[in-house]
Image 1 (cartoon, rainbow, N blue to C red):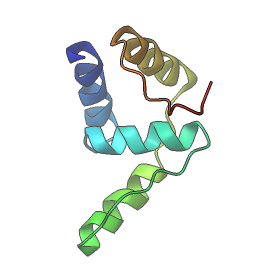
Image 2 (image 1 turned 90 degrees about the vertical axis):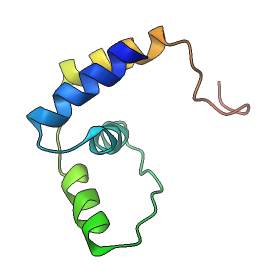
Image 3 (image 1 turned 30 degrees about the vertical axis):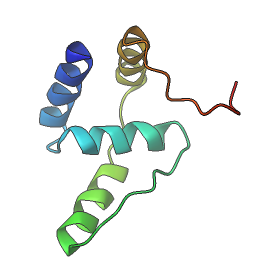
Length: 80
């Protein structure tokens, strides 16, 4: 897990965001729209910025490879 979060941190620095922003960008790159909460205008601004990040194919594949190594399943019971 540390390797994954370290890589996400490096990408966050590259794209001038934080790890949560990289997670949102990754979700959007996969055609998903994450459900997020926002209680302040700056949360919305950060979300809009995150949605606009375009991760490269290599970055997406690396994040997925590192996530797979954590052996944490994020799929719901009805997904295959």
